[in-house]
Image (cartoon, rainbow, N blue to C red; front, side, top):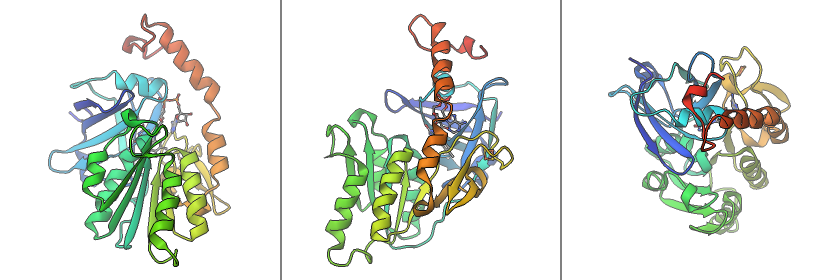
Length: 294
Ligand SMILES: Cc1cc2nc3c(=O)[nH]c(=O)nc-3n(C[C@H](O)[C@H](O)[C@H](O)COP(=O)(O)OP(=O)(O)OC[C@H]3O[C@@H](n4cnc5c(N)ncnc54)[C@H](O)[C@@H]3O)c2cc1C
Ligand code: FES
């Protein structure tokens, strides 16, 4: 039966990987696309990127960070459990062409959706320079996998516990300046960035100055994922777009990141209350599956 968790792995303290039985999605998905899941009849719908898909085994992989109540509940599921609804593949396929020198930038759990895109770009014959970052070394995921598809990889941590001490955006600036010398526009043909909105904004501000086309994968709040509810609306080039059907990938230089960030924070109070209420029933302060419907 579809939607069964075949393999659960804990990648870091708060990031988990599930391999799910989902043959139809595995057959039809492309890098850059996502699914919307509903754990049971009463839980909310949340979008998660398809981090990998295997047509032969009929499985997809999702990698998620525990951010609030729903991902907390999801992290308590285990091998053999089922997810009630798994809808997808959703969103537009990523643009996978031979561009030349491509810089792939991922922050936090954003490295998970970046990996299939990077692999596909590599297979198209692009030269890949990767810049990946996390809060500290214990929160860094998929370094080995990203290394395998990159000719050059830069690891960054906020606290310097691994690699470069600082943000991926700062490292990018260094990489552009070192690599390009006198002619900053000819060396990098495309940049892909996935991660927290504030990070994508910082990267796009830098690349706009250097005139390097940059694609950002937007993580606006989504409900239906089909362009009907309007929740995921974002402003791109002064026009309203729906990230679920028009994206999630957009030209970063045209994205109104300030609006995106303010809309992402719209339900913060309710999200915090949901977590507090949920944890109350658990003696360790952790969540309980039997409270999932409360
Ligand atoms: C296209 C897309 C792909 C994504 N892929 C991944 C992924 O591969 N791995 C991963 O860890 N996360 C991914 N996310 C983010 C993930 O959907 C949120 O972390 C999740 O919805 C949080 O739900 P929660 O109840 O646990 O947390 P909450 O406490 O409800 O929310 C925490 C924060 O998550 C965001 N969020 C909440 N609900 C939604 C929603 N319905 N849709 C989008 N964002 C929401 C908000 O910014 C919110 O402030 C993706 C988001 C989008 C739009
Ligand atoms: S999630 Fe409803 S329109 Fe995009």
